[in-house]
Length: 116
Ligand SMILES: [Zn+2]
Image (cartoon, rainbow, N blue to C red; front, side):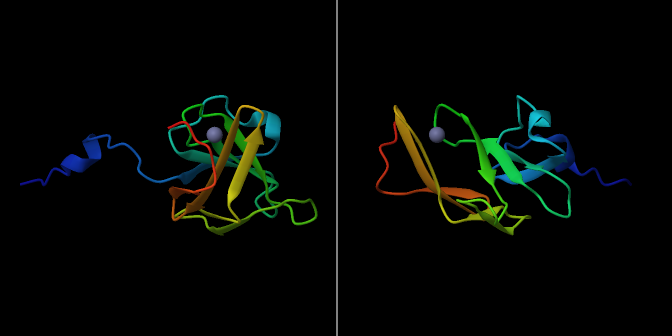
C-alpha cells in the first residue's frame, strides 16, 4: 500500500524568511516576491545585494548591500535559515523599520516606532 505524504499537498504558510532565488542584476528582481522570500542579486561568486519585503505592514522592498567595499554592508551568516547581520534599520520620513533577521525570524527592536 502506498503511503501518501499528505503534507506535500498542503500549502502551509512560510514561517521563516528564506532565499527563494538568485538574479544577475537589481532590475531583474521580481516586483512580487513570495511571502518571506528573499532574492540574491549578483553572481554566485559574489552577491551584491539581497532583496526582500519588509515585515512591517507596508511591505516595502528592502535591498540590502552585501558588498564589503560599500558601506553600510551586511553579511549573510546562515543562508538556510536566513540570518543577516547587523540589524536592518530602514528609515523614511514616515516610518522607521528596525529589526533583526535571525534564523529566518524577525525580531523588532524596542527603539522603533512601528505601526503594527
Ligand atoms: Zn518596513
